[in-house]
Amino acid sequence: MKGNPEPIPRVVQQTAERSLTGLPLFEAFVSACNDANVELKDFGLEGLRSCLSIASNWVEARRRHDILTSMGNVKITLAGSVRNDFFQTTPPNIDFLGTIPFTEAQAKIRQAKILLNVVGVFPDGSHERIWYGMAAGCPILTERGRLLEEDFVDGESIFYWPDDPEHINDLVSSLLADPKRLETAASNALPIYSKRHTWTQRAATILDSMAVGDE
Amino acid sequence: MTGTLSPILVTNRADNYSNHHMLEGLHEGFKALGYKSQLHLIGQDGTGLDAFLEALPDPTSEQGQNSFLVDLNARMRLPQTHPLKKFSFITDHPFALLEQILASPQEQYWGMLIAAMLLFLTPCSFRIAGHSSPTAALNRILISTRLSTVRSTPYSLDGSITLPALPTYKRV
Image 1 (cartoon, one colour):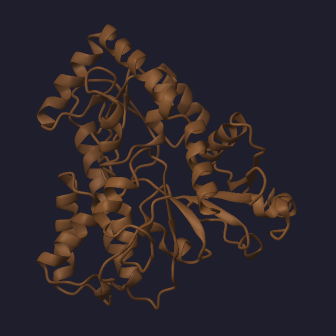
Image 2 (tube, rainbow over the protein chains, first blue to last red; image 1 turned 90 degrees about the vertical axis):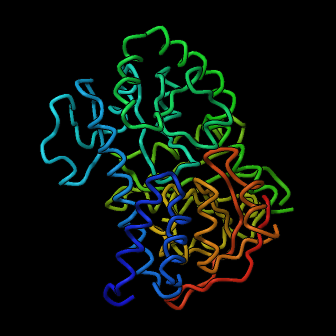
């Protein structure tokens, strides 16, 4: 793709907007391309990567920003890298640590009252921080997704972000005010995690695949 | 293959990111299942690379036939590793890793985060043999764990994307 022909910015914007509503990124991209009568082959590899990167980064940052700024005075520890302009000014309720060593992040998770996970661009996937959190006995608040919903029930063994962002603050505040509810959810999640989601189970999945491939 | 599988895990050392800790977790998982697993963490200055290369078995030997590499995001692409079977755990959307994926040997296994990634790889000329439709693949192949597996054969591109009429998939 040379330059930015007229439909391309619109395709990127629509990809981002549709992905933000929960559509997987590439499905959103294909949908936007179809609406603009643009074919994938017109992008070339670098154009494809650029457009999807822009949309993906925007969706992830937007989702995280919206959630982080929806929680009033709830104290939040934020670890990891963010874009330079992610916060114009870091909100006073957020303790932004930047990038920290993995082992230190694990210690923070063990101390947390609840682990907040926001990815946004993999609506049917998960993230290892969810599993590390469960392993540490930390209650999890995360996005819905087919993988998680197969095993974990909202309010019983996990908590999912409410559909309406207006309800985020109420949910988090009510959870923090009810330590017993948090403890119960973490306790309910732990045996499910131990049975189905440890690295040992992942290793077994890989071994099965490699063995099948040689048949 | 006649013996027990032997995983050889390799990735870059990245203390501030979860990457090498993920492979440490898998390494411990393989060992817990009774497999002889090796973990090689390569420093930014190349520390550990020689030891990794020396540990690679002769691919024509029984040990080589039973060994397979595990890496993250198709980063290990040294020619010495190409004869060995490999499983690459893709931890990001493949659009961000196309260069690495397309530069990988043709025969290897991929672990994807979500089924929707197949919809991206298929137009990128990946042939995923077996199932008759993407929908069947979405329903049957993936999502049982975050670490889903699909066997694929990438083909080199000429800088353009081609759309096959109907992708096919194989359950692994």
